[in-house]
Amino acid sequence: MITEDTRKLVDCPCGCGRDIPKISGSVENGNSKTNFYAYLMDEGDGPNLWLMLQSGPWFEDGLDCAIVVRSVRDEDGLTAYLKGQRASPWKDIEIPELKFLTREEVMAQEGGKAWVFRVHDEITHHHREISRFMWPDA
Ligand SMILES: [Zn+2]
Image (cartoon, rainbow, N blue to C red; front, side, top):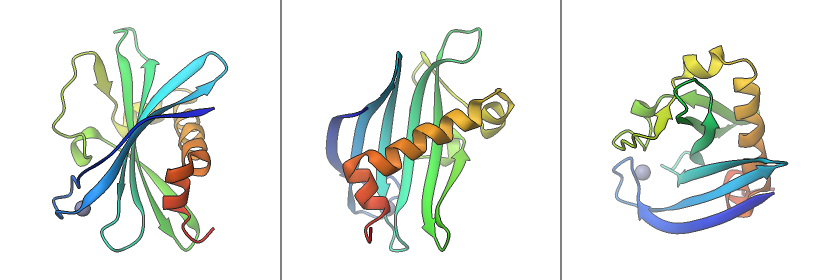
């Protein structure tokens, strides 16, 4: 089940000067709940979605983990890339309780990549506004 918590127009983090939607919400599967934050960017080449998933701790430090995924449309449909914090719209935020993972850390975690893309797919296909943004011709 997907819940939307907030939606607002913000300055596009890329610096293009446009106002773009920023959405936060959560995805629930059984007992697990994942918060997500999304920037719906479009620099003229089609949808450019930046999604940050906040999960519970993956490591012994007990910190919640943040995973960044960028998704674009192409001839094959939708392609998603794991990204580090520094390349993302969240590059300037620092939250002591939140550990941004590198692509390598996600790949090294057993089941990590599969989990990220499962939640990503659920959001991009089933969150109403985000799915309309990603699939405007559907
Ligand atoms: Zn922009």
